[in-house]
Length: 196
Image 1 (cartoon, rainbow, N blue to C red):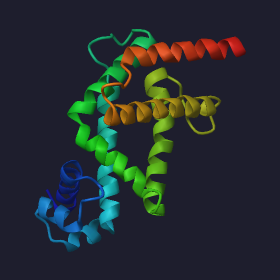
Image 2 (image 1 turned 180 degrees about the horizontal axis):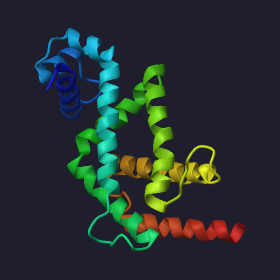
Image 3 (image 1 turned 90 degrees about the vertical axis):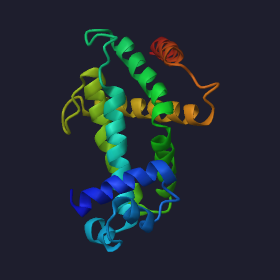
């Protein structure tokens, strides 16, 4: 493994152990057993490396919580598949808590760093149609007839995942279960349908 890969692994470890705001360049270099100057050489800045490490970690986390579980079966209803995914997200609040806390910290950096904001915005924009495709089979290729629908559906899922994660990080005792989320969404959908 070269310095670039070692730095990425070190940054990911630091994010989980120290958090975004408290990780220094020296921490990353020490965790990677790499010279301090290699951070700027390979990534341009500590922030760019931390952002890349955070995005990579969150993408892996997203793939893990979206993956089909043995129950329900892939041919199960959309509602059952989504409820299973929300249950995995809730479970991850324990298993992946340091990563999720670091991700929340990184979002606050976006307010003061156009570079961080741009990286996160690009990741969000790419995730929206992917969520719609993965969870609902809605193709959101740019310029397609379903692009707007895929973006809307993906945006709702992103809001649900972010909100669920924040509730479980802050107040796990009162945060909703997967079944409660499903029940709430069904009630909202009925209300929306009655307005139509």
